[in-house]
Amino acid sequence: MNQELIPTTEELRPDLLAIAEMLPDQARVLDLGCGDGALLAYLKQSKQIIGRGIEISEEGVLACVRRGLSVRQGNLQEGLADYPDKSFDVVILSQTLRYLNDPQMIVGEMLRVGHFAIVSFSNWGYWRSRLTLLLSGRIPEAPDHDQPWDEPPRWQAFTVTDFIDFCHKNGFVIRNQVFISGNRRGNFLNNLMSKSAIFELEKA
Amino acid sequence: MARPRLQKEAREHHLETDKMFAENSVGLVQTKTFHFAEDEPFLLESGESLQPVTIAYETYGQLNDERSNAILVLHALSGGGHAAGYHDAQEQKPGWWDTCIGPGKAFDTNRFFVICSNVLGSCYGSSGPMSINPQTNEPYGLNFPLVTIGDMVRAQVKLIDHLEIDQLLCVAGGSMGGMQALEWAAHYPDRVKAAIPLATTARHSPMLIAFSEVGRQAIYADPAWNNGAYYDQDSKPDAGLAVARMVGHITYLSEEAMHQKFGRRLQNIEKYGYEFETEFAIESYLKYNGNNFTRRFDANSYLYVTKALDYFDLSSETGSLAAAFANSTEVKYLVVSFTSDWLYPSYHSKELVSALTAAGADVTYLDIQSTWGHDAFLLEVDTMTNLMSSFLERLVHEEAINLPSHSSSEPAPVTP
Image 1 (cartoon, chains in turn brown, orange):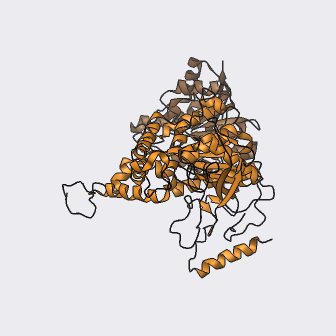
Image 2 (image 1 turned 135 degrees about the vertical axis):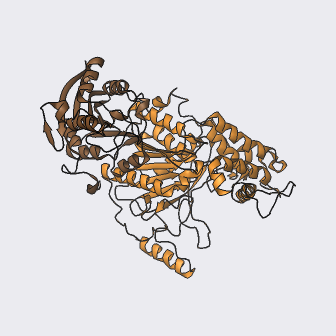
Image 3 (image 1 turned 30 degrees about the vertical axis):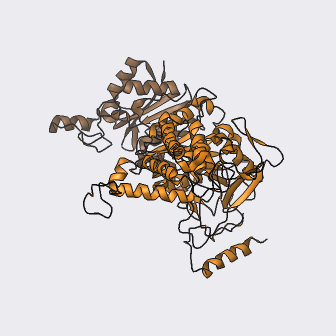
């Protein structure tokens, strides 16, 4: 494959790099909402994974195919019905959960199809987001992603604490969590200090 | 070896005739024929048999030393083995998929050995109703046995055997060509590494059968058809075949494409004539294409090939599509549909992709935004080139395919 199309460790978004570090070599990976395929291309090169992607946009699918990836155009809202149980080691949902109507359905499906699920998301509990709402009276954009509230696709803001509650309520067991603020990772007052978070889940 | 000399002669021939082919054209090509089933009859799905069988085909580019870089492209209802280049300098139009076959194109003839053969039952050199029945020394007409997509593909397998190719790198085609690609993948998974079914279905729908039947009825209703025995007569069932083709053309377009191309425009007149003449541009287009078709296609072949389409249902033996592909999960798939194709709507492809996913196959799928209707698979050249060349590039990488040793940027030689 064309080496220019594989992101280097420096080029990969920090949250994607953190996800990559969680994966074992040669894992079977399904990336939901895989976008332009940067993560899958990186994982194929650095971890020799067997990767598949699902992406809704034509532009994204074309970019993935250019990178030599196996990707299927599809809408996550329709679930993962075609995929057999436990057909992947890991199913990834990075920076996409805020766009989905039914978080419980999709995370449940991820844990049916995969042994583990990795979910990364923006954290509106970040102190600056809280301050924006408090001081300006306006809904803040995601701390790590510029997209005004009225620009499609619609998103739903939630925080690290919301996500932990959601996992407890639905019986999703948290195996591992990584918190990111800019290029740093931390583990101090996570809901207040991190711009985004990555959770590794399994079924109870 | 004679290859470079032939190539040189072909090139000089271009110069002589003052016709220069584009740099990315395969240039002058010839149709070849392959005969088989001379001693043993070729058994068909219907239980009937054929003996002997002729398959007309063309090839472009060269085989590599491992014979692992071959791609079989598969034509649609009215196509033939002439997929790229020109038969002579006077030929107006190149082969049917010339936009995608040639040096540097999606099916890059500098890298791949591209094969295209005319299907069984057709009229471009392969055995069909127009062929001479050796029993009677007259054209078969309706004595030609009914054939299926499966029969067409088994004849292609014979051709691939003859070319001494164990495994094709890829089979690719749109519409009926896509059905053949799926037939290859489902029934000969050890003979193909990848399949590219475009704008197609794994199961011909009742609506498609209905359109086929309207076309056939138009031919039956033409007195000149004479139950298929018209080859020695003065007139052929042109009127019936033209109507069949007109119906076909409507189904290949979309309403939006018709609006864009023709609108309600009148043809060569300023206002309505209030008479039963060709008045609208769309009427004129259909009439022109219908008539044109009668000069290049055989009415009986139209009957046979549309019947083959109607019989196509990959799930009929196994009960489900996923089961049909259960042993074909090593094949890599690139499935493409087009948003405005109402003949083979996207949900046919999505159903196929679901089945392939359930079977555990490696499948890439895209529903391309297009207003061109079913014809989009031939017209969306840029997107298709993008997709297919990337997919093939991936195969070359993953399957460690070597370039042919005679690879060059020169036009491919006339013979393989």
